[in-house]
Amino acid sequence: MVNESPRLARSAGLTGYLDLARSLGLDPYRLAAAQGLPGACLTDPDLKVPAEAIGRLLETTARRTGVEDFGLRLAETRRLSNLGAIGLVAREQPTLRAAIESIVHYSWLQNEALIWRLEDAGDLTIMRLALAADRRAGRQATELTIGVTVRTVRSLLGDRWRPEAIVFQYAAPSDTTTHRRVLGVNPTFGGEFTGVVFERRDLAAPIVNADPETARQLQRYVDQLAVRRQADPAATARELVLALLPTGGCNVEKVAALMGIDRRTLHRRLGRQGQTFTALVEAARRDVTEAHLAAGDRTLTEIADLLGYSSLSAFSRWRRRWREESRRSA
Image (cartoon, rainbow, N blue to C red; front, side, top):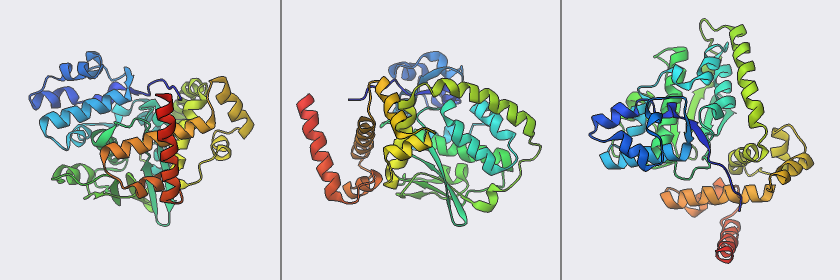
């Protein structure tokens, strides 16, 4: 089994939670403590706390209050400054595409559990949010993330901007009024991915008053922070595995190439951490499978597709082997 450190997120992800929870009659500090979160994370945006615990807190709060759109209500209060260094870098990029690419590239600064991928498809571009390693992130954390993304783009282009589409993989809630207000469109639910769809021409839009020199200085600073992250190749490889599984093209050669190294070097670096590429892939497949089975939001055939299996029978054989290995190790 692959042992991992918790994926961390800035407590800025809980900006606004204190007031919103209180307005709904809850004790936010008691709820945070129940998830193992320090009370200071509700007022200090720069603490690093487990992303999984934030997800659990949001889901618990939504369940206790019966507020299905809790995550979106939080997103509605966000500003570009809540993204910290990422927001500063994005603000100084020359075009919207460059700004989004910087958000995708540096998203780990805000939340290590987020895995973004940008895909061009004809006249459209999809900013796809892959399933995070945290199997309990849930609807609230997902909608908070998408809501913040939409508000970030509006802060760069103006409030009149609207996405071409918003897509969620899970089923629609009973009321989508808040979704339409915050996101600017009526989302598609039960889709093949979760993400924001842009018209490609929108991505060429210039960002007014952007300063390229400031952008370069900020990126140098952020890149220095990234040096420490590169010291954990297993974490980087796992993120790439999770992003590549749905494409059916997840293999050690491709992951190594995306990391800028060759296959042997990746194997060697993983070995130093007591891990293997095969174990990383198996762990990622288990996480994805267990997340969807627990949520009940996908059929087995759909889960097989998400894991890159060419047929349900191949996926079923893998599940049987996985269950047998789990029983033997129990």
